[in-house]
Length: 64
Image 1 (spheres, rainbow, N blue to C red):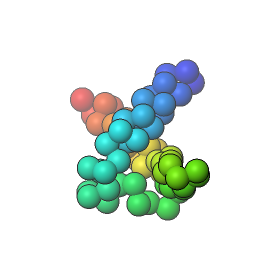
Image 2 (image 1 turned 180 degrees about the vertical axis):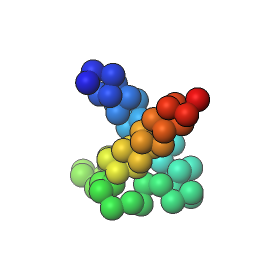
Image 3 (image 1 turned 90 degrees about the vertical axis):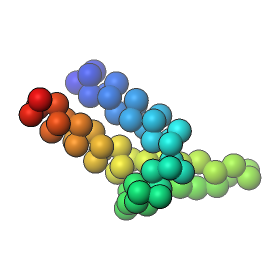
Image 4 (image 1 turned 120 degrees about the vertical axis):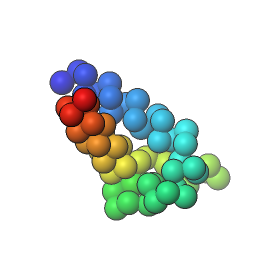
């Protein structure tokens, strides 16, 4: 369980860092990805994109 939590946190951080580049490919605009503004700053929580990328990486790891 701890391994999945670590993978999830790493994916959230990476998606947050590369959100502009990934939005051009369609990630970050999925239902469940939260984007809100508070006090003039924009915050982004890519929940659905993180789950999708985690599942994709899990499938790739299983077949390799």
